[in-house]
Length: 633
Image (cartoon, rainbow, N blue to C red):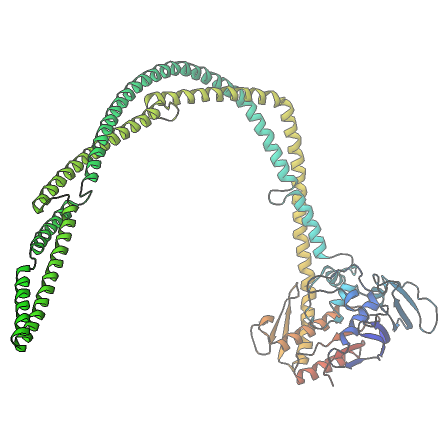
């Protein structure tokens, strides 16, 4: 098969056309110019668009990803040569939900349909392989050089190295056999474990029936013993509780009398203390600290005595009168006898005025002292300084009496509180003693024994009833034994099937290993040949496992390298070599389909790119090769 020309309304392509020739076709264009779109269009024209795919995180289905930017329907045509005939393939869209569903294949330049080609089978009939195998071999997408296994590719490989039929896959056959195996046994599930559980259950039923009768008689004997224990304990519990109640009432009565006496004593002393406190508070001095009162009284008494003396120190009017008489005589003499005598009289008058003023000042100070003394004596209700001592002594007596009464009141309250605490403790203890369910007394202990004995009696009665019911529902032992024999026969049959399936799985695995041993060396040998060409002989060995994991060995090395240790460019080169080897071995030899490559050389240096182009040119001598690239010359 060879592609001659394509016209597409597909993604960014809007009626664009492109032509190809035999051999190697290199389409060079910059990024974002539609190279990957043309590759996807080739696949869509051959195998159609899967309209059932749905968008999800990180993935867009082709029907969405390649919807024409122009808004036109998704459609296109492809002119090919296959089997010596020129054929034109056309796919159009009747609705956006089913893009490129309408298909036609006619002889180019005519309306003559090509028999046997339809929308579903066109790709597989033209290329000779299914969509899955095509994508894993001849269709090399951008960023997807690595080869991975699939049931379809396994079928193709099996057909090459064995019978030539492509309807069997080791993975599918192995999964089918293992599904049959799991149906019979998978961990604790499957028919065999189910039969094991059922057989075990029926055997348990027989053992239960055999032991049920013996157990029932034992239970009945124990029930009789429990009934006797209950009767004995009931009598002991009744007498013990009666005695504990009587003792408790006597103790509570004595404690209550003690508490009442202590309360009355406290009440009497409290009345006396309140009276003494009132007498103290109504005293002239009031409720104060004796030491402070004594100190203040001593100070006030001394002050009052000082004030008394100051009040008695008054000015004398006799001197003032004598001065006044002399001044008057001097004035008369001065007027009558001499002016000098008059001047002396004036001076004498001035002195008389000063004496008068001094006398008045002393009188005022004495009056103030007397008033302050009266206030001090009034504070103590005393007539003189000596009375202050009597007032203080009376205060000290009242204070001492009040303090003594209050102390007796406090002591009485402490005795009353202690009596109340003892009474409360006794009440709590008595309540605990009378708690015949949870207490620590003998009566409580006997009560719990009685409750336990009654529970045991009820439990035994219930267990006997349950045993009777279970024995009645277990059925006939002969029927159970017959059922066990039938299930054992079925189990033996299922076990033989399980063993046969296990043998088939082992045999299939050995057969698959044989197929792989015949295919993988050939694939590795061819991939190594291609690898050596593209690396100038640097790598001369490629080892490929069943799951297509790959190791490469450099010339001169003794141990091959895992793919993870290779550079990005070498890794892409190795994957390209394996892809081309798969194409050589897995694709049909007749009417070979083209190889489509979407920019696989992006990580190659210039030298290896030239070597890869030379290899593609060699391959293109046998089949058409279409290479889309952004930098090939």
